[in-house]
Length: 338
Image 1 (cartoon, rainbow, N blue to C red):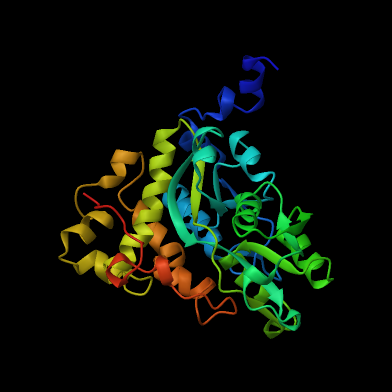
Image 2 (image 1 turned 60 degrees about the vertical axis):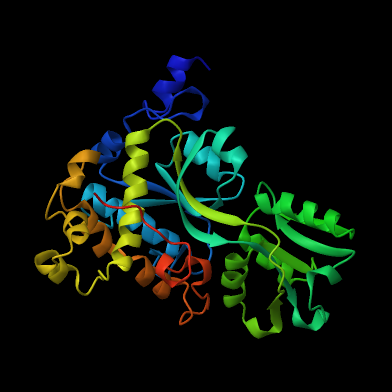
């Protein structure tokens, strides 16, 4: 396909080689809806509820971005993507942003021409097995069959880890978490491996979650990050700083409950800048002064989102761990709003 035809086909949204034009912000505004790439269905992170409304930790990023850019957190089209289709959906222009538990890696950042703007969940790969299997460590899985999603870093990590530990396994390839859950419960594999957060989310959806255990080994670093197309720095800045607004809000004690009071009365210069009372940071990224305020109002600050969707009080039961604020021993840290 000729380059001119390709550009016409994609509405000018993407350049050859997967690089974005600078028009993403304008196109989202003209369309009046954000196309957000999400998981096909992972409890707590991104899944439609009984009424078809998408909910979850990653979905909250989409809502915050729509609120910041379009003034309405509901103006989102959720596009389900698998491990194999997610990056094509982004590079082709089908989605404007990918908020879908995707690991930030060297090859994806450089060779696939993606820009990962921020890590929204620090994770690592683990293993889940039936309690009845009697296994207490991944090192006991020699010769096991393992369900694994193709087209993922998980697939490569698994091969590396088994090789390093001088044990063998038989892969059972799956395309989605739903298929993995089905195959695992049907006994097609002895173990299921993916990000530990994904295992917790999957187990929570089982009829008898206590019949399954997540083994103690974490065999990789999996910084799950929000991605945009390479080359559109203006759009990347908007997505990056919208996420950081959620992190900074928690750091400064701004919540969905006290947002208006903080905006009206806070004497903290950083809070005043973040909430658009001084300096007009929005003008620097093509938005109005209240962009960050709307983003925070959409689903709350980072901590509120975490606790409501995947935290210890939810069926997913994840603790903050590395995803705690930097002041609480975690890695969540927003650069200065100034």
